[in-house]
Length: 180
Image (cartoon, rainbow, N blue to C red):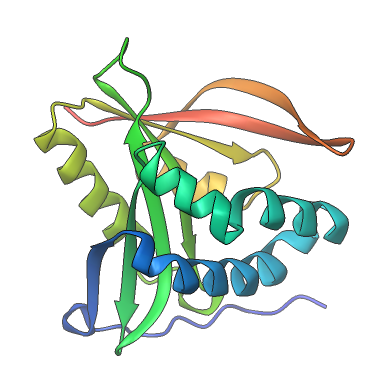
């Protein structure tokens, strides 16, 4: 059955974005569980979802991303409720102008209302303020978010097939947004 998406007007004054550190881990985990289980069954198997949630979203994995790998997380709040998050960092010291968007997730019922674009805009301003000129991400080739990223200015730079363990593979586009 095909459902029509009905836009929900969201006043920008009711939304806010804030940086978070390890104190945000429980919120990030809860949002990950909810969003991944709603969005990704049409893209990858439930077994792969379970594996990836454990691999990338356990408390230990998130703490390592924040404290050891230098990922900056942001939380998007709407009507005093956390509804999305993202993380980014410099890609590597050899190429300091390129930053990597590691995660960008928003509750599906709020997609299409400018909130994802607001998170990208926030991150872009942060990256520019730190001397970055490019923002790179991986996205599954089957993910409907590919059209969102293209719409806001990302372009496909290459394709990659990644073995992530347990016999699972990710078939991704690497997309880049030029910031300056």
